[in-house]
Length: 264
Image (tube, rainbow, N blue to C red; front, side, top):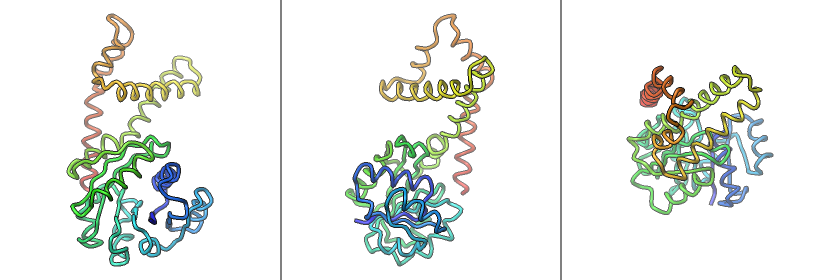
């Protein structure tokens, strides 16, 4: 089996790293393409895979072909691949806003297509990926995609109509979380903490809170209440967040992200 990547950016490299670390295939079974020779050489040195600047070569050889490109590049990169992929190749796209119908229109309705939405924590094997197959994808092919996605984090199958919502609450949300952690750290610095310690405390507490919720299965409201002692310090902070519209701001941001995804 040959796994091909068209596009060798951060997300593709996170996937390649997960695939190799889990031993799903050997390095010589992965072929990737990028626009520049410099990128190809760098990825080849780092992961030991074969690389090329020729997208057609990758499409010709891949049994599973990842379209790891930005949505803005889709209309330029994908149409030339029509008719050059293997007959039973599985096409996997990670481009936000590009639907299964878009991919089928560009490559042909007979293709097996899976649409993915990973997020950047995949770069440290802590990703969260939504998976949506078309009707031609058999169970074995879907299982392989899930195995690949779970090599760099969690993965769940969802209906395609929910992909824009997933994009907003998982695909894009690391940016919101980083803003939150930066604000926490800035507040710590204002209160006298050294900046390096403030960043570490903010990141560690955010990571620990997420792990606590996932491993206990408790509702986030219950976990919040566990921190808020009667008459204590935390409830004072919670009141300020409520008064300044913290929840509403997050919900408005998610809605804006969904609308943008629909219009890509």
